[in-house]
Image (tube, rainbow, N blue to C red):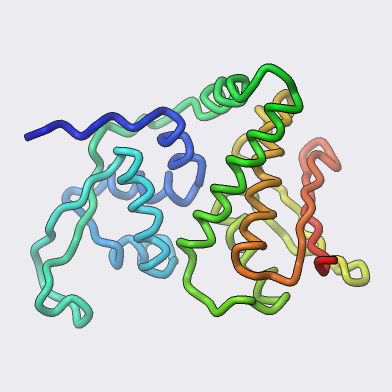
Amino acid sequence: MTPRPVAPVADVHAALAAPMRRRLLAHLAEALSPLDAHELAAEVGLHPSTVRFHLETLRSAGLVERTAVSGAARTDTVGRPRTGYAVTRPVRSTPDYEELARRLAAGLGDTATVRDARAEGVGAAWGRELAAGATPVEAPVPAEAAVSRTVQMLGELGFRPARLEEEGSRIRIALHGCPFREVARDNPEVCALHRGLLSASLESMGSPLSGQLLPFVQPELCMVHLEPAS
């Protein structure tokens, strides 16, 4: 059998940057047999289509593989074998994501301006990918739906968002957590990536809102402001 090509380290990093994908990978690593999207969806509380998107991202990075699953058929899989997922490599219990993020940020360019622009572009591509994998909705989405989806996305990425009282037309979301906060303190490219992610995800869903990321308004707090797009 031809070995599966090794995914570039950037692909692996992008796949593991989302806390939800790390959670799914941990479930698969602990499972005694392959699990399908419906079983994993029940474990993590997401829609199966959203879980399937995350699993395919992990598969593209070479971290999981698809396999046929035997067992009782569901009503939505009658006549079709179920597709299960299993890990393809051992999962480290304490992977050094911060060091990996530091090295990738440093390799984006020779100047701060170049690194910032490239990081924002990477984040924008990531935001469009997340929007494409979310539960489909008709675009453009109403402002309130856009806010809800943005909060959900930020939660799945590990930012621990909390919606605050509005200031006029401005919607404020406090980010109490960040998977790469310590890296971001010395590498603002991390924040540029998240800025691109936020803007592109809002644009992709046809939102009437624009987003602004305010890093480190307090030592352990960042903010997102959503306002009607001009």
